[in-house]
Every structure is written in structure tokens, then in C-alpha cells.
Length: 544
Image 1 (cartoon, rainbow, N blue to C red):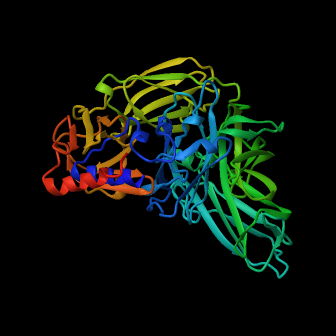
Image 2: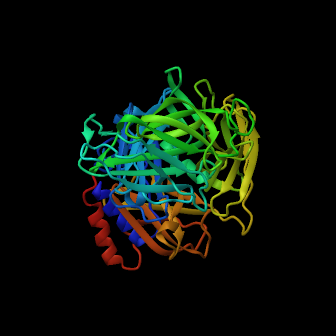
């Protein structure tokens, strides 16, 4: 696909918009049929501490239907240039009827905790936007606190005294996790071998379950999951309602600890405003809550048992339990969604004319205002979607404009597991009048006619703003983006990615509502016609 990117780079250098292919396989030598682009999911990565996206990100598809998943460029290797990974489904593996594609996307980067995200794609679910927050293992965030400690061990690898390690209270995270390791404990690696030859390095991350930002840090990236093993031993879909959760890792001599010869004690302080499903009343001492574990490597949630809720030494409600293995632990309720029917949703936004789009956040919360789910959506008039992965409890929804943070629509659903059809009228954002700007670019190669590469996503920011300011503008479809996010007379920086390459075009001013143009021999070749003609011919040369 380097041939495509050469042509793509030329087009961007000449103008500021790009074209997309109705059938890239007609002209380009890609690894799979161009129909791979009919179903896609875009993963937009950020870091929990606001630092730059690392350069060594690896993205891998695993699980049942991973064989049908490709990078959007057609490569089996999945890339994440500029922190954006876009996957597509091979035409032989597209979902049909009621059969969904189910797979996991594993994301790794040095210095960050691994992410294992369950992904499901159903028929006619052509596009998804999945926001992913990478958590730096040793750095706190507004929704998490961290402790890192070294514990000396004897020559036989045993602890010599009882040791307690606790996460700190911070300005934003007021609950803690404590870990008590008794004297005489030895530590085992993944193969069951006793580890020795160094100190015990322990790190724990405690999360604030009331902070909406913690949703992105929850195991799997959201509260709903397809593979939760219940107390009865069955595995199915469910939604977590956490009162607290923590991620604990230990290493001896650089080797990760998986098990202990003697159980250790865990204490997780809990959200004081939590209401168990069994009572609907505020949590109190004497209640019992379920404890679940999560293995990042497998993406599997497992029921561990019940924990007693009691006031700890800090006079805070906490759940205490023992464990002989390390993992992520979640304390709270789990509500099955195995028998749920997801409601169909139609968004009505007549102010988005002619297929124009606008980025919005869909936020779902319970009746107490605690956020259960968020998703980013490219809104357009008449968009048909579903509210997926919600528990069978009353919920509220809000449609929030990403650009202005204005609530454009809100409402409630008595039972989001009862199916049905929901129509949501989305109001127009306030402020300056909405302008629906059209970006279209057609490319004509000498002696070959119109050439268009595949659909893909474009990001934008105000010209000169920080790299972190890039947000999704939209998806080029059939060479077209029509959006309400740009303003005539304003200047922007644009960014697109393809395979492992990134192209930026800076300081481009929107001069008209219709920015359509055609580039090609005998047509528009910009101001440096001779040079650009040579570039166009070179870029088109190897297209068949």
C-alpha cells in the first residue's frame, strides 16, 4: 500500500482534503479485497497522565474471530500511528444475521499497563469509535492513585516480616487499597517456580469508581463484558457496578509474580455513596459484596467469592479478602445481561443537512447520576444505532456536543434490556450559526482515469494548537466528508494515518462551504504545475 500513500501524500500536499475509494482493489495491490473497509473500528488512544502517546505501541487481534481482522490498510499487522489504530473485517468474515464477530484487541506499550479490549461487531454496525486510555503503571491520574514499594526478602525468597503496603489518599482519590503480606510468604512465577534472587517490587493502583474517567481504566475499557464467570460457574455477558477496584502487580528479580505459597490480605476501601442492588440503600458495615478477578492476558473475569464490608482503621467502609494470586480485583455487584434485548435508537438532527456529521458523546448513567457508559459517535440526521451493554435497571442518557460540551438531548429508559425503538431528537448547539462544510477531492491519474483510495478517518485541530488537541473530524466516504465542525474563514491543521504512516497538512483555511475540487492532468495542479504534474505521474505510475 506504499503506492497509495505516495499518491495520498501528493494529494494532501497539493490541497488539504483527500479522496476515498469506492473499490480500492480495482487499482491498488492490497493484501485482501477492498471490501475489508465495509466494517471498521477506530481505536483512539490517549494516556491517563496526559503525556505523549508512546511510539512503541503494539496492537494485536486475538480470540474467536481474530482471523477475520486486519489493519484498515489491508495488512494483517495492525498499526497505531499517532495513537490511532483502525481495524477492518475481511469480506469472508463479515457478520451475518444474528451472528456477531467477537474478538479481543490487545494493546501494549512500554511503561503502561496492558489493555485487553473485547470487541463485538454485528451486522450493519459498519463503524465504531473506541476511546482507549493507557494507564502508566507508576504514575497517578485524576481517577487513580499509585503506590510502588520495595520489600526485602530472605535468601530463600521468603518475606522476613509482615509488611503492609497502601495506596495514598490524593486530592482526587480519597479511598485506598492496602496489601498485607505475612512473614514467610514465597512468590511463584507463571510456571509455578519459587522466585528468589532479589527484592520484592510491589505496585498497586487504586481507582475511584465514581469518577467517569475511571470507566476508561476499568478492565476491558468498559463496565460491560461478554465473558464473566458467575458464582454458579457459567460464563456470560454482564455489567459491573463497582464499589471499588484495584490493579496489583509484584515482581521478584524482574519476574512477575502470579501466585503465593500463603494467601495475602487485600483491603479495598469502597465508594461511600454506593447502593447494593440487593437493598437499594447506602452501603453499610455488615453488607456483603462480590469480589471478581480479571486476568489481562486472557481478558477473563472470574468470581472469587463474597467479601464482608466493615469499617477499617481509617473508619472507612472497606471490603477485606484473601488471595493466593495477583490480578485486577473488582468489588461490587454484577448484573447479568445474557437475556437482554438492546434498544434500537434513531437520532434526529435536521440541522445536520445533506449527510453532514458532528462528533458527540453519548453518556449513560443510573438514576443516582453515576456514569455507566460513554461512547463517541459521529452524529448525522437519521443515524440508526443501538444502546449496547447496559444493565436491566433504569438509566438516563445525555447527548453531549464534543466541541462545546453542551447537552443536546437527554432522557430516561426504564429498562434498557427490554428492546424496543427509541427516537432521540438532538438539539442544535448554541453559539454561531451551524455551517455544514463539504470536503471532496477527486483524483484523475494520467491514462487511468479517476483513482480513489479507501475510506479512512481524518482528525483536525485549530492551527498551531498542541498535538494533543487533535480530535476526530469524520470519515471520508466515497471521497466526501461533510461536517459541521469547521468554520469558513478559520484555519486548521489536519492529520490522517494509513498503515504505519502519518500525514499532516497545517495552516489550511476554509474559504467556502463547498471545498470540492478535482486534481489531475489538465485539471487543478496547484501553483507549481510542472513539479506537481511530475509528482502526480510518479504517484500514479504503479497503479494497475
